[in-house]
Image (cartoon, rainbow, N blue to C red; front, side, top):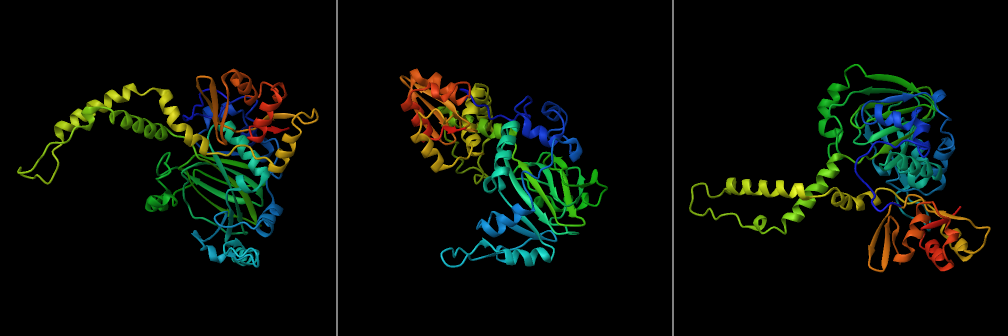
Length: 416
């Protein structure tokens, strides 16, 4: 892991490591980054992609998640005719020993689905292993965090009316066919606090115009939509299943917020910024503050502070958000303990755990690796060796027994 993790907005990366992204865009990652990313939609047919998406999800996966996994809300929701159904329409208690009242009920889901409702299985990047692994690889390729939902729509039905998302989207068609209508944004590059329902009138008006793109997605096809692009979709002759990969992009607004936070902190240490505003008692209109002169002083103070904030200060402020936006690679707890007990067994190979997203902090004789899963302290003399292990350029078996076991039991290295 590098000393400085850069959470600033960035396009997808190119190179051999971008296999997840290349799999769904049908072009080199660098071309997608320079020509398509955040600019315009891209439809890629299955015949132009390396393979279909049957290894990621299926109708059987839907049935297993609904019937066998005891999922609860908000891991699912249902919608019909553009309206989200109440949780009670598709959930029920689990019976003796599992009486939690909001578990998915296959009986109620069947009833609503048969009447035309769409089932949305949410956060599959947490609940379905193939999607989890793919989404983690895609997030690494993009440099932006992702989430994945599945949309299961009965034939000839539309789950949601025209709307836009506040995140970029990759649509991966799993089964059935779905007719998509795509229209240009009514608000370009919306932020998280600018959802489509704040602009219902503009969205409804735009939905009456000719689509920018109207195409049918078939199994194996992929569609990319930048945030803000209006879309709606209708299942055609059979049940349609697609994955929606939502990319929660880092934006310049994140840098703005970090910069303003840092400026505010700096000005708290400046006595001129802490001065009281003048007393206005006895003057006409004294119920309003008189700030003209003070506003000019504050603008000068802010302008000066802005020039003094270095890029690495912004990186430091955003590190926590970056770490919290994704999870580290999953592993089996019991398998990890068993492997750690056999740390010297030559038959057990080790590697750095994926997606740790960490950086080093050194103070005197001790260095600490700060990551998504916690902190790991080592003597300064071991820092370079451990860093090379975590960067994947040194075999963990080159470390001494005690250090390897500590790394294993802390979850920083995993078998494989």
